[in-house]
Image 1 (cartoon, helix red, strand yellow):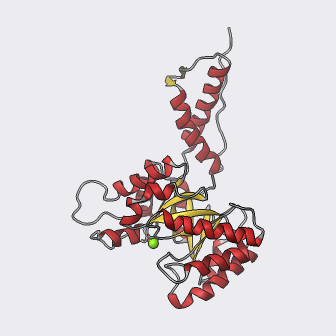
Image 2 (image 1 turned 30 degrees about the horizontal axis):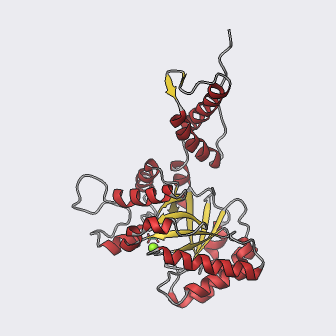
Image 3 (image 1 turned 120 degrees about the vertical axis):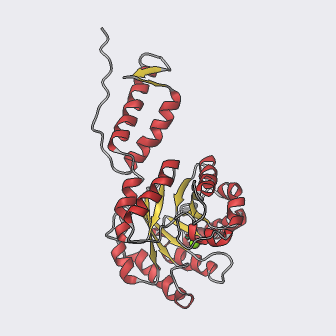
Amino acid sequence: MRARRSCLAVPGSNPRFIEKAQGLAADEIFLDLEDSVAPGAKEDARKNVVGALREGDWTGKTVVVRVNDLTTQWTYRDVIEIVEAAGDRLDCVMLPKVQDASHVVWLATLLDQIERAAGLPEGGIGIEAQIENAAGLVNVDAIAASSPRLETLVFGPADFMASIGMRTLVVGEQPPGYGEGDAYHYILMRILMAARAHGLQAIDGPYLQIRDVDGLRRVARRSAALGFDGKWVLHPGQVDVVNEVFSPSQRDYDHAELILDAYEYYTTVEKRGAVMLGDEMIDEASRKMALVVAAKGRAAGLARTAAFTPPSST
Ligand code: GLV
Ligand code: MG
């Protein structure tokens, strides 16, 4: 699994932002050819993106290009030009406004052909699918099952809110008049279930009030608490908060590693399945939960500060 706590959107038409992005601590950078690039700038943006992939230093980052959606005239050329010229530098292609499985299958087939023609490892380039309208959500299970190339489902709140007619212009915030509850809960859970049922990551979309760091933290914590793996960021000032929110705390990380060690010791050395770790009863289900937290902590670069000591055998 690639790290995707923070996924930074960088307009493909802006060389200055592309340059700056290389020094930021975002786990994923996606160079955008879609909504942050004006129609008249699409072709130049492709060239910028190829140049940035070829010459930039993206070490340690998940590198993605977002192409235009399949209702436009640009998608096929986006994919062909980028992957032919720089496919060896690319981790994934992100496809926006996915409405059904056929969109992903189309992209996977095109990638099959380009990889073969260009001598790239077959199946090497992954796909990120954005769910950002009612049709996409209704078909999300089939979309999640559509290709082994698929790595993640990504919620696109701005387009989604427009698609369903939600009565607010403030992306990620509750629509006035809704009262108690979270207007996004069903959408987030639906995407998360489909992702998990098919072994994919689930990524939350952007928070557009880029100066409101407290608002960002509040909204990010909501999807992190449900189980999402990361969230988009649109500005360098959003990266640290999102990395922090989507990393487990040191305490939870240490605890998870202790559960794994203790469970391993008791099941293999003492051959017992349900055991006590301090005051806590742990079993196979605890091990599964601990594995998730430990994996997120390791991916976030956390180091253990507590070790498991087996009980003395007196
Ligand atoms: C992202 O693409 C969004 O529409 O929110
Ligand atoms: Mg969108």
